[in-house]
Length: 302
Image (tube, rainbow, N blue to C red; front, side, top):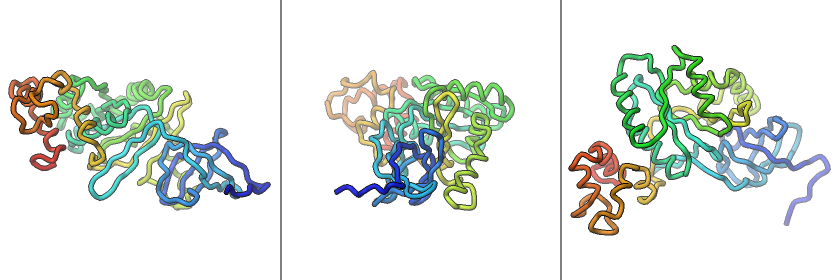
């Protein structure tokens, strides 16, 4: 049975632009920001969600329903699931030579994006640094050779060029920034959205936190109709939510060998006459990539 609507209430469409605990920030079609709670539920709102909300008082609302999501990127391990953003078109995976990056983090993020049906771009930042540059350049080239889009920038020493590259990657699309801590995501964000820090403080005031919400994802609309979502840095990208079929699809170098194994249900781990294992032995598939696949299959640890 539906609840009666008071004369001082109104229903409106909005987008979730920030979350903190039970409280979320919404932006309506006029750009007005609302502080909102999810009626009857907890924890199921994600930055980027399109929702139907009901005004409860001045600047306050309750979320009545969530519009079906077009995409959702998240990570999961055996202990918890963490949603990163909903309704995004592209994920920008940022890394740099310093602090030391994890190649497996990049590869896991690519697998997660592929399974979610979201385009991924690898962004190498801090290309002005000499320390660790060779390893970073090799990682970027390997990923590019596998068919993913890549870009190399330096937010600090080449700000104009970097801003132009970011604008090209976000024009008319809703993009998500992810990466390990210290890779320069905040600097990249500030190039694209100079008022980001001021808007973050505004978010905090609406949420009544008294400080910046550095541990939460934030949605920033862009002038061309696109958007950029910033997420806090994290060190591990769990893939416990990825099925074996989705996992396999995250390895484009395996595609030419599909259907060439002796067994149709070959897992490409220990089975005889496996085309993929033969390709590894012949050097057609990189051994480190195959070892990564085995690890994700819980062979030889993770």
